[in-house]
Length: 252
Length: 315
Image (tube, rainbow over all chains, first blue to last red; front, side):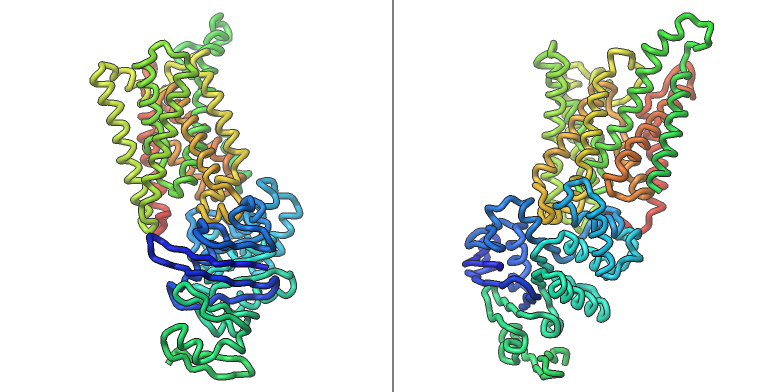
């Protein structure tokens, strides 16, 4: 279980998160939604100890992120930040293999290599393993980065807008793969999503943030209503039921 | 691919090493009674010094590029070498009969501070402007270099400064190059931590996420770069371009997974410097052109080709 208790965060005096308290049970896919600047990315990076916690507490299965050694945490949770850029020329296979670093500490064995191939296959990259990351499309690179966090074999995966720059087919494939990661591999996936309809279709839980505060949380069918989405994003969002699932019609 | 390049380079290096042993004013014909002496006291130490310097400077350059996360910096232009020279100068001034170990410590410490300073400056640059990094590094290195020259000028020590800044191997004989073995050992240590530097090259957040203590990795890298530079500057002087040209060529040919590429990088560095040293010894025989000068010419040409052959990629 992820426990977030009274977390507040400010950057040069400006509050980004205000007293967020949230408990996420193990398993399943949780979608973090909310308008730009709501504090989603900050919350995720605080959870992953990428930034120093200013106030409050965060723990994964009782492991406090500020007190647990970082190499121990690397076996508990993995994070993919949005817009990860790197100049290093690595093949996709090498990149995914670095996800195994917390396990092999620089000396990968045959078990690690098998896990890497498994991750490549799961994310549809088996033919691209030998290609350099700067020679594949943005969507393929993005999938490789998610595969890298998967290969880290942690109980918790935190993904910050992994659907960025992905077309329809790739976005759907990635969301279905994340579903599989949760259902078949028993991992807990927390994913920041901008497009609420992907959240509605693939997530078990929705957590909505607005202006650094928890706006609402619950199952998609319960919380994705016109009133709530309209208030969350500050713009009218018509919602229809299609095949028993809420669909936001926010394009018109 | 990686293995092919590595073994090919090793073979070329072996050929060049034999050529280096046979090149010089004194003929090593079998009948010459002094031949063994020349070989053991002069030719072999020189060849080993060149190989150790080339290999460790190439490794130091690559490690520095991973720390700064930019391909166009290297120790001799970005303040590390200048810092080392400043350290030696200060020791010469204030403790003229200092033991060699103290000299090395001072040079390494000043190099470390200078490189750490560069890292702090570069971190503040916008990541959207990757070319700002080498430019700022160049200015930064030049400022420290200017301080060294100023002090040298004021105190009539310019001749020494010249020796530290213009690298060349003509003074290498048995008993006057052995510190470079330590430099080689440091390069081997870098290989043992290869994965950590590759991950550091992916950025702080990726490092933390994979459970690395990023600050410690950076400090380890700074130590490696500084000690290699300090030992090189003190023993043979600054050897430019190796640290930038070799890692860039290696990156294009082999990629950036340091665990796989570092041996190749070291061999390429040794081969390049040995080839340039040989050229310097042959063109004006029996006189010599400093290896730094030859490297400047060769390095500039190679680097231009490199930039030209890599369209649209700044990082």
